[in-house]
Amino acid sequence: MAGGAGLAKRLGTFLSGLLECGAFCGIIFGWASLVFVLKDLGYFEGLCQPSATPGPNLTLGSDCSGQDEQFSLVFTIGSFMNNFMTFPMGVVFDRFGTMAARLIAISLYAGGTLLVAFSTPEMAVLLFPAMSMLSVGGILLILTNMQVGNLFGNYRSILITLYNGAFDSSSAIFLIVKLLYEHGLSLRAMFLFLAACSAWHLLRTLFLMPRTHIPYPLPPDYDYGLRCRGRSRSYRTYKDKQPSVEAAPEETPLEPPIPRGGAPSGTPFRACACSWLFAWHVAWLSVMQLRHYLFIGTLNPQLEHLAHGDHGLVSTYTNAFAFTQLCGVLCAPWNGLILDRHKRGKGPRPEGALAALADLRSAVLSLVVTVAQCLLFSVLAAVPVLPVQFGTFVLQVISRSFLYGGNAAFLAIAFPPQHFGKLYGLAMALSALVALLQYPCVALVQGPLQGDPFYMNLGLIAVVLVAFVSPVVVTRECQRRAKELGMVSTPLAAAPSAEIHVETPH
Image 1 (cartoon, rainbow, N blue to C red):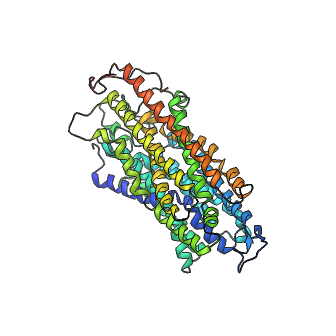
Image 2: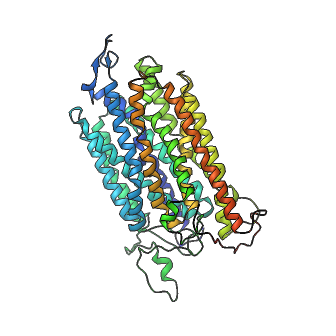
């Protein structure tokens, strides 16, 4: 781990980033827990209609399918913005650097928490912009954090997946909000506290993050963050030590001559975005993400259907689901171990083009395992037995942590590093369009299916099978690149100095 930034500083950057991702970035995905609080406060209560058989209280004695649909719509729009806005935010990150992107993220996050804090049942419509702002701010924060993996060389994929696992675990924050609310703390006080945490994000931006980007591989004597004399050292530390190189603005990325991505550094963004490799990866991401979003968005109605309206039982299962989300940070690094497995051991490690090919080959197993997990999760989710849902919760958090960590790591492996932010954002934006199908699916369950999602779950099992095409496409791409390197029979036996002569990923 060469570089001018000391180990303590790098560890501080990593650990503070892990805390940031684990406590703030993905809180919207704990929506099921927050819905309990919002229902108790009376948000969208006017949409409840008296049922034919009224019960002892409003919730059980009324038909609140309209209220559930409205909460589902808030989550649908928020999750859509979480993905769709990643592309323009990725462009901002690639073009203007880390500091600009994080300042935008902090502003959005603070604004979203303040909107929730000052919302009321009469102003429940504020939940729509609030959840959207929290989503976009959170995804932009994790986007700027994933580059921290570049500081740790051979553990890069592990750290990227770990951050994505922490992103999943942050959904448990709304469980904490629910539990504190049940113990008397007001919703406004809790969200004002979350808004005040923006000051910590700002301090981390100034002192523990680069102004532009962290390059990969890491150049010698690399440093970042503000120093005592107030100067950012993001790229200038390395450039200033070159004896006869003209000084360049800090905003100019330092790209290595032989990238560790799966495609040459000169490959244009359009060629990467239009490749079959990227297209099928987006399909891989989209179908599994739709499965997860539908599960989260319909969890409360599904549990109420299986529990036959027992409010206490539904609350117990909702808490169990939220607790399992904490395990995302523990599950995600296993995917990183799969991706980085060829970098360990006593044998010689490949370099240059061979290392890029080895990285891409290691991604095939990760892609297959992720789809298999999602398929098993979908099967259990379709079983209309309430105790089975405990197993569904466990598989859901494992599958989701593998999905998002694997997505980010694959894009970092398969494509040039200077396009990572744009490709990551484009993949998330395209998958967001597919995720819009969740709202008509919810309407189908609430309407013609009369609250029973069984047949919809069966259909989703078939949809998830489409994701198996992506690892097949990646395998064929590996074979093509190996053939161009003249190493089909001995994939790692060629000279380390071999260079890739491919034009674009297919």
